[in-house]
Image (cartoon, rainbow, N blue to C red; front, side, top):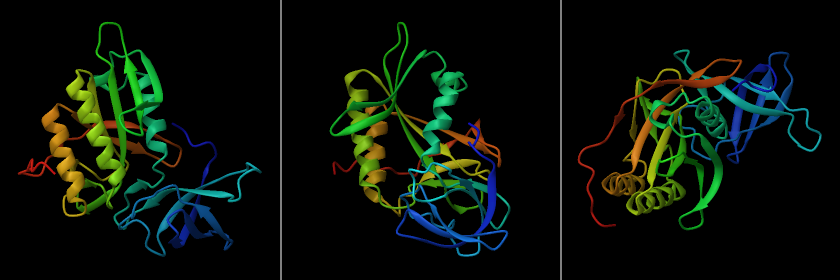
Length: 243
């Protein structure tokens, strides 16, 4: 997935109201950019951070810039636009880059399922059980090399896990796909201390047969593609407490 226009370097002044960020371009111009990330962005939204934004020339949109990348203190690139995760995975599904899902030849995005949910991708193929794929963009890292999800409490994420568990119990294939959108991660785990309810829902999903996959994104200032698979470290014990 290539960015639609060349990214522009800037400095973050502040992020506020979740979806807004004041920025300063290299020529000194200050502007407000759209921040497509509903999470806490822990460790990624510090004033003074080096960021990259994409110019938007659509006259129907109020903000002229969209915040895409941030560079960490160690030089790693992180994609903060959670909406791009689906585009990256869709491209990988079309090109059959994900070995675990490469047999599927029909891809339908945003299909209704469960209770008030839409699955990111519903895959089908001749003689194969339908595969329901839910994508999560992972950007948090509090230990070198280890990415974590979620970075804030996510009732929506827990609901998706409950829906995936029901899919798995029905005999279809249910897949939770973590796309780690930072270049310095070697593994991913669940942030149990941040959202215990999500952690419990993940335990129930695993017990029901939900498959968890994780891949790291390859990030450049030109675009983002699927990179290598990453191990998923499951906190032990994940207690099935019936809640």
